[in-house]
Length: 296
Length: 249
Image 1: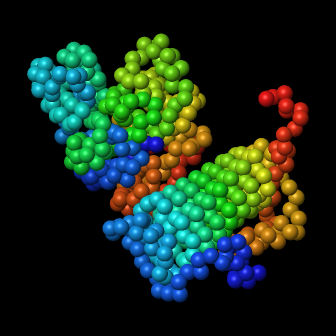
Image 2: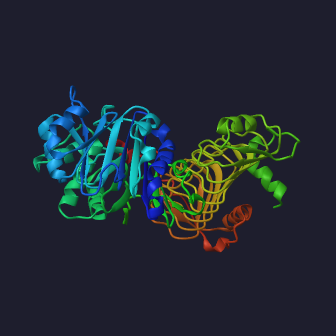
Image 3: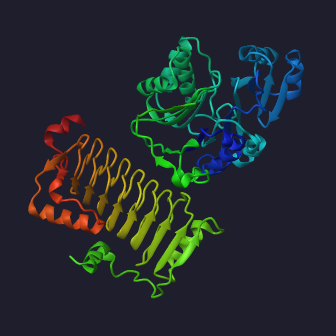
């Protein structure tokens, strides 16, 4: 079991409330995944200001956020520690900032990067982690959160979701892939490198490689459906939008709610119940094997 | 058939159990307040009234699970997983949608969902009547063992999987794999069937089938003409081990 929630805002008046709404949704899936929690927020200009790149990092043992700030001093970075995650924003390019972090700390794990995205992940109780990440204080146009009950790999910050392995991309997964080792070998042969032994990371790397080839989210997820075997409900986000797909057997739950003001997806209705206007929302379960996508 | 007789039928063999209290004043539980589902269910398991209302269900799990008395519970809003599970004689109405496993393992009584139901509605249920006015998701009536299920809309794939006894009425369409590995349940579908599962076949509608279907539709309050439905059931080819398969093991 794991819990997924995602919120794509259509009404800009709700942007300042993104974090509060996402936190209330996260609280509805705590019981589905008490091991760890991760979040991703799109469009929070306090975390990733206009003209900046943001990189989320798991620092290696012995490294400190202060040490990272000193090492990147030439880039004039803003470094914000939040539990296991350290967020670095700097007025430079995404690739340049990622390269600078890797140069400063070669064994650091980059868990997210982009021009519009802040990713946090770590182990612990999801409610505590929401406070650690200051989720309630987040604003923006889109966000997602995941609560994890580990099945395929260890309870570590690296194994926590979301997996953000391409620019401004995130993937969260409820389920388990059964042919991930085969696909991992194929991707490694193509030159892709991995940060964890997690099966969901294989899904994220696969989607990132398809997007890098110029496909959109919908096409990439159709390809994933044809390639991956196993159980999954996936929520995948990018700088353009938000997509959901379930495997053709659809053992893993998902509910979608839509109003004129927002599109939301969650593992269970109880995570959607606190949203404003839920009583008049269009509520439905995504059909097995069908890709649902929304763009800005 | 009059209403009293119908009730008796859906009470099944447990009709004499838990007649319930005499108090008919409705007791309201607001699940947004302290106590939540646990205090609601504790009351329903030792009821002091015949009538309950539940406010702000907000998708909570196990609402009104384990009732074993002739009491009525109205849930105003969307229910989460296993709502009215194991119901034995109660009348539970969800004024909204229901999550996974509504009325799972019901023994007797009536459960009505005015909206849609998620997966595995009525799973393994032995008796009673489950009415879903909207549509049901996948695996509706999986391993049903005597329950009657009437769905106003459509059902998802693998519905009535390994169904053993009871009747399922689908007024819309059925998804793929309907009645896979079915034993003796009778399935009535008004719309299209995606595919039939292993050993599930179409069977002729005889007078007794039209009669029982008319009764089920009347119980559910649905206006359809039984002549619009087709019947499906077991081909009875998977019942027994056959000697020509012995080489497979």
